[in-house]
Length: 524
Ligand SMILES: NC(=O)c1ccc[n+]([C@@H]2O[C@H](COP(=O)([O-])OP(=O)(O)OC[C@H]3O[C@@H](n4cnc5c(N)ncnc54)[C@H](O)[C@@H]3O)[C@@H](O)[C@H]2O)c1
Ligand SMILES: O=C(O)CC[C@@H](O)C(=O)O
Image (tube, rainbow, N blue to C red; front, side):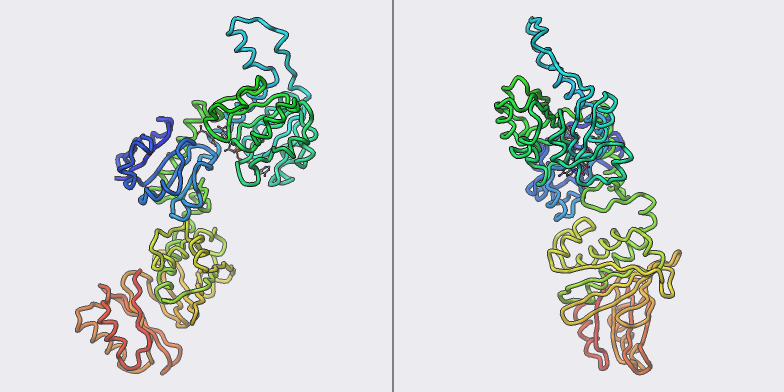
């Protein structure tokens, strides 16, 4: 039974695909309520309240996937998850509209002082002159971060007759032109905008982006909005710009610390706040919970996920096309790693023929994971393979060739070790399966499966008989045997597939046979 911990409040309707699956047990409890059984969960679903720290990941050794029902993954230690081989997915667009609408609601409330007027009337006052606002129409709106939410805010702003200026260093000119916004530098935006709203992720580049230096470049009387992440507008700097009257008003849905407690910002009349409500609509919560539930279900069924933070994204179509090569590459990695039982510095992969046109990133990760598996004690999979290879000083590269060299497709792997270089070539043949067609300089044809025994010897009469007799005497049945040689009387190899693995003693006996140079067990 697969166990999923849902540790933050999530829409039941959205979780329905998981709740309906009889092979899955969904536990809806806080992490602190299940401390004794953390090691039993396969998946963890969170919103922003649960902090997925390295410590929590260590306490959940069985965890395979973390699903964030929302966009921001700053509550998840993605690097640690990657190291532990845990996939992190999010629900990138389920709450876009809700958050854009919330931003707009905050903007209108801010300039018309609606929260303050509301409190006043509720206090039995009727003070119309105290709440004179300004129009949005004709104002210059500066949008910092023009992704999903930023661009939805822009659409609404234009409908209100505002002039929209955008700053986003990753925005392509073509996309900006298509949407018809004025793309400018940060300094230009700061100088022109009457209202500035931030919609970037919180990164080391965006932390404190609106700090003392940049706030000083804004117009006197500017309004600021943050419905993205606390800290993009530096709260300490904001205090001084509110105190000196430079900033006319601020709307905050998010804070550096949540909840903000008794933060001095809360005592300003012209600071309006909500408790991180951008995504808090019925629609958004159903959307994000449905998105993560469906993705987690797909992942647990071995299907590709499309919204992973730490894995290459694959569509179902692409996954179906690469699946065969993904498996072949994994087996090639496992075989090569065992053959090269020494430190290696570099792995070069060449994709030839039809496979060269596919999304090979995933295939390469599969090969690396196969290669590292026999060498690494911890979990290694497509998520962390590239990172572990790098940590261990193993460089890897991909090359592509349209020509499959006698095969419709092939993957050639060259491993550069401290003392030797090893090359193998594999292909996948529909209805026939995975075949290794070149091994260590020899043309051969074997299936990379099961208990393999590689023997390198001198091409002399009787060698096959000698090996066969010894294995037979020790009750080891040979399922298949392939042979290859470079030239008559020269170096030759045998690749045997056995019904059971060989023990060390038998390997030693085979090594002692005259004219046998190498004996290697390869377990796939
Ligand atoms: N308040 C809420 O409840 C709520 C809900 C959803 C999302 N969010 C937050 O809103 C933010 C935006 O979400 P989104 O879905 O639009 O994300 P997105 O990834 O679609 O857009 C982010 C944009 O920021 C841009 N960007 C990155 N670094 C930048 C920089 N240094 N300067 C300027 N632009 C930069 C990116 O190029 C991208 O276009 C995120 O921080 C997300 O966590 C908050
Ligand atoms: O879970 C929430 O309500 C907040 C979500 C929001 O901050 C996000 O980044 O998607």
